[in-house]
Each structure stands twice: as C-alpha cells, then as structure tokens.
Amino acid sequence: MGIGNGEFHDIDSIWYARVGSAFCMTMMLNVFTPNILTWLRLCCCDAAKRKGMREIAATQKKLNESYSGAIFKLEYRYPTVLNVIFVTMLYSSGMPILYPIAAVTFGVMYITDKVALLRLYNRPPMYKASLARLTLNILPIAIVFHLCMAVWMYGSNTLVSHPLSYHNTTYTLSLVRKQAQIEFLAGNDTAAENVADQFNIVSRIEKLNGFIPFFLLLCILIFFILKILVWWWVVWATECFIKIISCGKCGIHSRVVPERKFLPGYTEPHVMYVGDIREMHLTTVEKEQGWICKQNEDGILQRYKVWMEDGVMTGLRYERGTKKATWEVIRDTALHTYDISENPNYSDAFGGARRRSIGGAAVGASLGAGGV
Image (cartoon, rainbow, N blue to C red):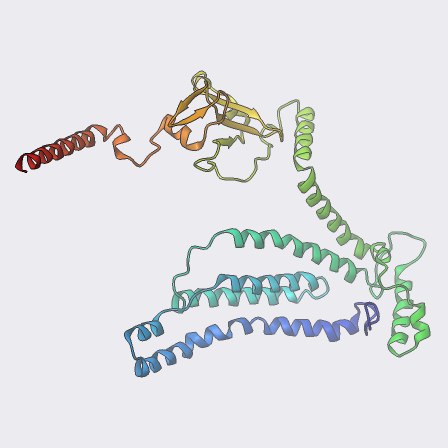
C-alpha cells in the first residue's frame, strides 16, 4: 500500500458513499460530544458532588472548594472550533451538508459556553488577544485548503464539465475513465494500467469546474505574496497611478498606516503615524517646539519631536535632532510623574503642608535635644 494505491482511484460516488458519509457522521457526533461532560456537570454531577461533600467534608476549606466553580479554559475551546472549521472547509466543496452541521455545532457550543459561564465556571481571567490573533491568522489557510480540495473534487474525471480546450470533450473522456475505474475495482489490473494518472493536476485544471477555484486560489496566493514582499511598493504605485489619472484629486487618503497603538511605549521614541496628509502641516509654534513630520523609508508619514539643542536633563545627555521619548513629550506639555507636589494645581497647598511638617519636625527635634 502507498499513495495512489488505495481502494479509491478518485473522489467519485463510491468514495462519497463510504468515506464522505463517515465524515458527515463524525461531524454530526461532534455537535454533542465536546459538550456532553459540561451538560452532565450542569445537570447532576456537580450537585451530587456538593451533596456528598456536605456529608464527608472534614474542613470548611474542602466544603468551600466543592461549591466553588470550575476553571474555564479557553485554550481547550479553540482547537475544537478550528477542527470544525478546517474539516468543513476542506470537504465542503463536495459535501455542502457540512455547512449546516458546522453552524449547528457552533450554535450548540455558544449556548453551552454561555450557560456554563453563568452557572458552572468561575469568572474567567482577562485573556490577552494573542490567541485570538493567532486563530485569525490561521483562518486564511483554511480558505487555501478549501480551494485546493475544490480543484480536486470539481476536476474529477467522473464529473461532466466543459473543457477549456476544444480538441476533445471532457464528458466522453469521463465516461471512459469511469468504466476503467469500475474494471479496476473489479480487480482487472490491465484496465488499471490504462487509467490516466490520478495525480495529473493539469487535466483537472483544464476543465471549467476545476479552473474556477484554481483561478481564485491563484489570486489569493498572489495577494499574500505581494502583501508579504512588496506590499508597500504596490500601494505606492497604485496611489501614484490613481493620482495621475484623476489629476491629483483622488488617492490622497489611500495611504496604508501600519497597525499599532496610537501612542508608543512610555520609554520608546514618540513616533506617531499620520494617516491623513492634511495632518502633516505643522504650525510655526510646533516647529519651534521641535515637531517634525516626514516620510520614513517605507513612504509612511511620521510625526515626532526632537531635541532642538544639545544638553543634559535629569542626568541624561541629549544631542540635537534626537527623537524624544513619550514621557519626555508628556513632560513638555503635561504632568509626567505621580509626585503630587509637581502638579501646579496642588503644588502650593501641598508645598505649604510639607513646609509646615518639616518645620514641626525640626521644632520637635530641637525640643527633644533640649530636654536631654
């Protein structure tokens, strides 16, 4: 046994009857199997556990633990969801019944998790968005798998399709290959040798049924390659082209700004990305304060503040033209410390209170020294 030597020569009606039906049955069972334990705990298991602990609990701590909720583990739910998504997208081209099955699965999971969060689990912790972003980045792979499998299923030799070339008819060829497959399943090795190579992708793409998903797959792959390699150049070229054909009236707001926080880190250089070209104009006061707005090497407008002259502040030496950190920019315009005496709105009141406290401490110390 090996690849290409299996029982099924192609994805045909026999494959759907045996393998496809098994996939559908497994997915239907998957609607309930991941949630059975949760519903058992909601209905009877946890209540029986608490009743038993009331009888045998030796300490109050053990009794409290029996009444405390379980821990909701989000990392266990993501694999189940991804499994349903990928299996559905992989085989749904030939078995569209998987779409409503997946919808029911997600609906049951949603209701189960909602009821369990209210009735069973403790309040979940504050999860970071890294797991959700990772899942979101994985989902396009499911689309690629879906289109690859669509090319294979729709380009099958057992399906009627219009050929892209007119030198033969795919329908006649399909009948011949289907008859050869029947002979192959009957055990005729001579007929198996005459069957065309089942891994001939070109013959599947030459059919209209297989060419359409292949074209979509090609477009998606080209898009991702351009996005990874030359995305900024493509955006720049497109913007220039739009400006030329519109005489500069369009394409002004089409610049792509990288996804990041509005403000950088507290100790990082205070660099802000400008999405609107109208925001690049600086006033005379802003220029005197050291604000600069210019494009980086990727053609993205950046707005930042620099030191206007060399000097030393708070024990740190700065050179002219160096970008200021975020906390330094805040210090120039607002309060940058938690010391309440540095706030001009409270400096007088708390400054006087501090002077009085220092004076009282000095008087007390002098009296104590005189008493000795």
